[in-house]
Structures are given as C-alpha cells and as structure tokens.
Image (tube, rainbow, N blue to C red; front, side, top):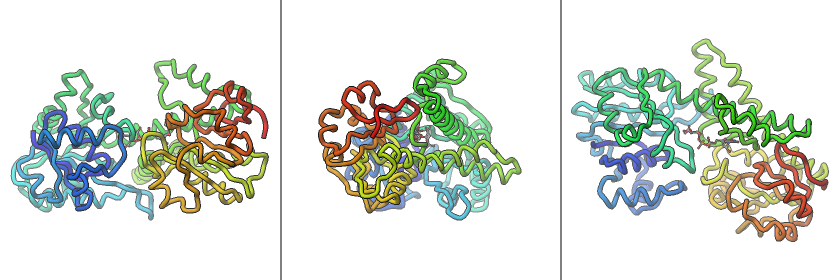
Length: 439
Ligand code: UGA
C-alpha cells in the first residue's frame, strides 16, 4: 500500500519507518529542506533508539523515501497521514492547529483520487470535522475520508510501542476508510493486536484521556510518596502492593520529580481548555496540572534541605537533564525549573546528560556541562539524580564518594538502594523512602 506521511518529526518519522517495515511504501514529507536533506544522508533529527537502523533498512529496501514536495508524495496514495506538530498556543494553552489545517488545505488542493486522510497528530475533539470542512471548501468534489488514528508512542520506546501496541485506535464510521486502515495495520491484526474502531470524536478523545489518566497516576503516586516520607513508609512497597491489583496495574507508579515532556503537560492543558469550551470544567485535570507544577520547586527545596538548609556558593552536580531516560528531549523537563530554583538559591550547577546536553545548552545557559558523570561529581557539594539513565545505575559509588566534596546524594528517581547508599556512607535522600544519614 502507498502512504504519505506529512511531517517528519518524532511521530511522523517513527510511524513512517514502521509502516515501511510492515511492507508499505511510505514517503515522508517535511517543509524543512535541511531536515529532509539530512534524512536522505541517513542522519536522524532526533535521538530514538533503533530509529536510524530502521530508517536505513527501509530506505535501502526502497520502501521509505523523503521529500519536501507534498504534491509528489500524495500522488496515487491510499492514505495520507497528518503528523505535524500541535504545540500549545502561548496565548491560551489550546493546541495550535494551524499546521494541521495548513496540511489539510495543501492535501485537498492536490489529491485526485480516493484516499483516507488520517490525523496522527494529537488534536482536540472535533478537529476531524474541521479538516473535512476545509477539504470540502478547497475541493467540493474531493473523494476523501477523514479518520482519527492517535499514536500512543513513548519517546525512547517508540518503535516497540508502534510494532507491539496494546491497541490501535481508529476513529471512522466510513466503510471504505475502515478497509484501508485495516489493511495498513494488517501485520498487527494478524498478531492479535486489538484494533479498535470507534467514532472519530471518540478516537480524538481517547488520546487525551489516556495521557491525562497516566499523568494522574504519576501525580497520585507522587503525593503518596510525600505521605510515605512523613509516615516512615516506603513508596515502592506501596506502589507494588497497589499495582498488583489488576484494576490498578503496576505501570506508571514510579514516584519522581513530576512528569514532563512534549506530551503530558501540553495535552492536559488542552484537555482542560476543551472541557471549559464544552462547559464541562474537568477539575481533576486542573488539580493534577497544579500539583505537578508545584512539585518541581518542591524538589529544589528538598535538595536545599538535604544540603543543610543553604546552597549559596555551593556546587550541585546534576546527573541527567532530559525529562526521562533514552531521549534527548528537554521539553518541559522538570530539570529546567529545578536547576533554575537552585541557581536562584545561589548555587552553581554542573550537569551531565548522555544525550540531552546539546538541547539543554540553549535552555539552561548558566550551567557548567561535564564530559561524564564522574567529572560532574568532582568537588561538588551534593549529587542529584534527575533522570534515570541506566548508566547512572551502574556508577562506581565508591569513586563517586571519593570525588564529592560532601557525600550527599539526592536521588529523584530512586535508582539506588538505600542500604547500598548507607553502606557507602552517603547522606541519601530519595523519593518516598526513608532518608539515610544527614548532611
Ligand atoms: C507519553 C505517553 O506515555 C505515550 O503513550 C504518548 O503517546 C505520548 O506521551 C504522546 O502523547 O505522544 P512520553 O511523553 O514519551 O509518552 O513519556 P512517558 O514515558 O509517558 O513519560 C512522561 C513523563 O512521566 C516523564 O517525565 C516521566 O519521567 C514521567 N513518569 C512516567 C514518571 O514520573 N513516573 C512513571 O511511573 C512514569
């Protein structure tokens, strides 16, 4: 089947490469000529494990290509995916749909046979209706179906999430569109992946509701972690104990510094605004957003307290800056607010992240960037674990202790075991677990 993917960003590139790997012929389109030229040279615009190899394989086998020409890409295809960005509008927090609508206009202007127009971008409920209206405006006789097919890809695990998803959601009540979509996802249907056909508006809402629910789960366990600290309980035991209940499930119950990234913060805000527009204020979402925002500065206060109450003139070593491991993405990372708060309190911050430093440099300019974790720790007054990179779990703790000026570790991801930290003689503060030693 021939497919065009409009937008060669995170979602477009991963989805395009995976559809090609299913055996379809995919053309990825992007207006950014530099990005397309780089992709043609085999250079990835993002860090995503396995993506470069998957792209190279499918380019070599001639199922995947790149172009800046939307008109060339959509000629004769069965499906056109819209996978452009939908950032938050600074003015009101609503999703900015201008790129989506622009793509719809351009597609409508050049299509000549039947095709399915599929939104992969995260779009508010009702956007599919607007796309259908735009298409009818540009080409009243266009024979196109508009379908919602949200993505549920996690950065860092996006290829596995595409190839082995919990479910595929397809929003349409048009029979022809169903057939096209079914064929596109046939390799997954054959592996017994649930392919869920819903109405278009239902599919649009499923995406937002899923992200909001996951963010709620994280925020809930973060608050339980705060309670555990005061009540001398261990949040990991509590999370394990509740997660074994199938109605709750064990995932997304890792307490930490608060959620970040390019999706949860933006999508919760958009859902909140959509609720208000429909006259249905979703108070739980409002509360989740506010708790998560406040948590970041609370983490900075925790670091200051672990250092004895003042960090003026001190050096804080920070391991990890990205919003989670296995990505170079700094968008809405809790590290941004935490580093800023530490600097406001008079500390110098030195940081190391295996993938995120290039992006971090443009956001956090007054930070010293180290070449590795040990160089980061050298002579620092405390070490903070911000992101749960596997390489940090394997650090030589004896060496870290000898490098630090004061043996204080604040582990915001609970990557170390308290007993082990006690054995090495650290003052160790983690999240939702008893504190070990004192600064
Ligand atoms: C999220 C969803 O998980 C995907 O299903 C969705 O497709 C994607 O958004 C999207 O809308 O495009 P992602 O933003 O890549 O994916 O990252 P997550 O793995 O969901 O993590 C989000 C944040 O929650 C991170 O800051 C992470 O550190 C935090 N988190 C996650 C926790 O603090 N605890 C957990 O147990 C899990």
